[in-house]
Amino acid sequence: NAGVTQTPKFQVLKTGQSMTLQCAQDMNHEYMSWYRQDPGMGLRLIHYSVGAGITDQGEVPNGYNVSRSTTEDFPLRLLSAAPSQTSVYFCASSVAGATGELFFGEGSRLTVL
Amino acid sequence: DAKTTQPNSMESNEEEPVHLPCNHSTISGTDYIHWYRQLPSQGPEYVIHGLTSNVNNRMASLAIAEDRKSSTLILHRATLRDAAVYYCILNEGAGSYQLTFGKGTKLSVIP
Image (cartoon, rainbow over all chains, first blue to last red; front, side, top):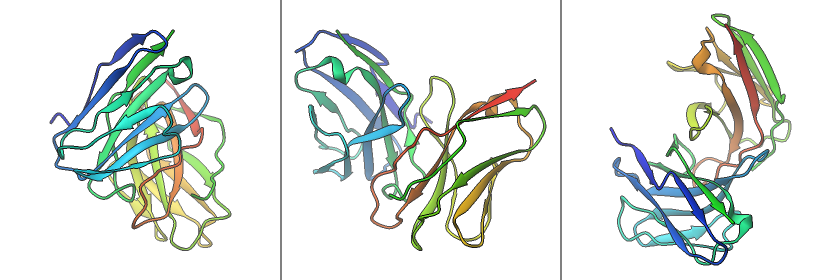
């Protein structure tokens, strides 16, 4: 079982560059979300989606874009990377929002120089 | 989401039970209590959740105080693989799309 797959696992960017973090799940989950985790802090929600074509902002959405064209995929786009976006990013999915069991990917570690 | 308070760290000997406490004095009547854990260099992993009654699953037990202002995650026999950060999270239930993670409790397991 693949579960939630994130790519790439590691990425180094220069300030101003753009990139996309990929997230795919094979569990037919309607809900998908992106969190970021900074040292000494808990995970914070960036964006989420409750189904194909539907996205919404979380706690820290600035500087990030998302789209959901299929149930399986939920990419996170950094439009113009900044050092403040250096973090570990986690994608998560579930059957029913945050009320049940969330399945997380292994994370993508991003460094912006 | 309402706030939770957990100890920063705890230690346990291997093969002994572990009781991880969580205070949530401002919990509302519809808030569910969720526990997740995060092993080093991995994403969080669901452990258990409950509303009012105590809950058991293959990983752990969740004991909820009668007034629901506190709860305890119980690992019945700690193994080295249980060394992780454990997060106690309140969730509003139906229609909720965000989990608010605090800093959690870092559990160390001593061989």
